[in-house]
Length: 100
Image (tube, rainbow, N blue to C red; front, side, top):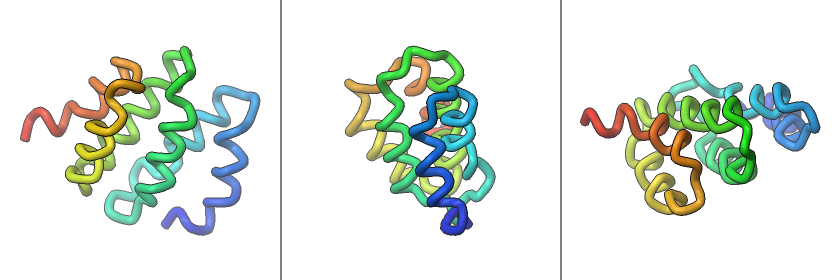
């Protein structure tokens, strides 16, 4: 569960190092229904402005994995944020949803 990691992840998402920020986004990747969706969405929103491929890809990947256990939450997030979201992130995040 993400709860014990949360304070550390909240520091990491603000880190100057891209790889630390990326790790904060990907840390919940395999938690499935135990993913803290609010925190994942918050982190994705915080990093949407970044131009770096690896951050954009990580956000999409994390959202895609979460969509396997909570598709409605991810669909709602994508609908809300589509106009702010990099195309790469949106494409990655919606891959599983498009197949349903």
